[in-house]
Length: 282
Image 1 (tube, rainbow, N blue to C red):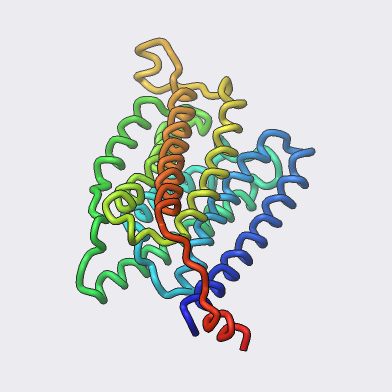
Image 2 (spheres, helix red, strand yellow):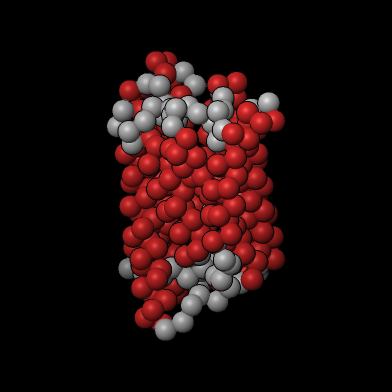
């Protein structure tokens, strides 16, 4: 099969994933918004995050190529989802208030975590097979995790009524907000290796961040805190931290989108040759 045919097949696979998840997201949102109100946006955010990861998994399965996908970024995503699930699987503080908070919301987060772990294992397997690390994917992630836990311990809310799991949830949110940093680092250092699927991933991630940010903006006054720091300064800043995390994530995805658009604009337009078109029609 020619290169044009392979690209056409990849586009078809991505279109199917988009169609399935778009239908699921619209259906669940329309079904729950009348009963659950604002919490429908939180469920929609989890669906879009799962959608974004499914796009990359589908591309990896169809192309058998993970070049340009940051393993460091996947590690941060796995840590973020793990921290969030440690709270939402059995506590009620940070889940939708409707029936989707019982199982459906957690299902999409669990599905996202499993897909991220599979994709991460595949990336590491490819790196071991080639006996080298991916050039440019060397941004240290430990400082991001440590700083996220420190900030979460200082500014966590108390919706779970448990300091440990309130801190873990806030840590998951903060780690998720910076999880694109290694991908941005890789894109900047090796722009020629950035696969087109990253644009799809970033686009759907933007929808997830907007949905989540809108929900927490409307629920801003519900954030209370019993942390030692909040009591010491006499102010509750947990809601401000949550909103700042979403703003930072949107800044990251905006940078990726801008970089991708610049790269596409500078690339010469290439159309399939007549032989390639005829080869795919046969």
